[in-house]
Length: 350
Image (cartoon, rainbow, N blue to C red; front, side):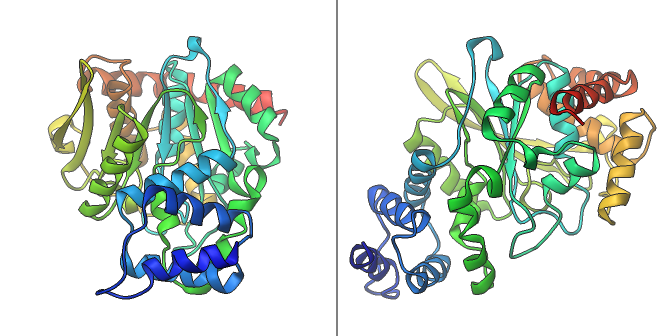
């Protein structure tokens, strides 16, 4: 197998003039051999840095997703759940701005939208705060649950979390290679659009650089994903910014055709503008989130309403963004979101 991998490595690592992109099938084969340990450590490191220098294509991302779909964990949805929303964010976390995604997930689950999140532990290159630490601070120990147990919590509460070290150790084994090469590998881009769920979904994916969105859309097309939202979000997350216009892409299904629309949303037009909430310690962030769940007004509360309201509209709970904002604020002020968190903690047994 290492001989086969060597040929794929030569394809992408031969330089500007002779190097080539991988086909979807080749990218899937390469990713599979790395996950299964069939490529040597030297080959894996060389492949990740060569692919980083070359930059991935949408077709290559689609192939990498194929391998993750074949070998990785999958939660299952049921018809009664409706369309499940996947909130995809960078696995290497956040280091400058406070993450809002866990609050968004709780708001959506409270409103009846089934939500799946996923991620790992502290990870290169940013080594920022990962979701798992935030959930731990809120009293939810996703990392202790088997995938079967996560499935049960997901079905009963509307929220699930797939944790890389526990549920996909083959992929987690590649983290050290990413740390050693010192650069964000294409795996990090692919993780943003990972769908750890069987059946149709609505995927929300963040990005930083506009070309990344183009890769996403190509991969979506190849995978037949017709329901998605792309966000030029905070630090590459799917969190909408408040200090600038939010640049958003939405898919629109018309008959059997998927079209793409661009939204430019100014938070100040909706009474949600302001400075981004800086990220302090995990303890400070969790304390701020607890205050939001108690209905106390703050900059983080405003960010939670802005994000929660947008996604309530995008997930079809509310007919427009203004109604979404009102509903998000009402759910937080009524303690219903806090009740949802207590429900999840009770199901997990904490």
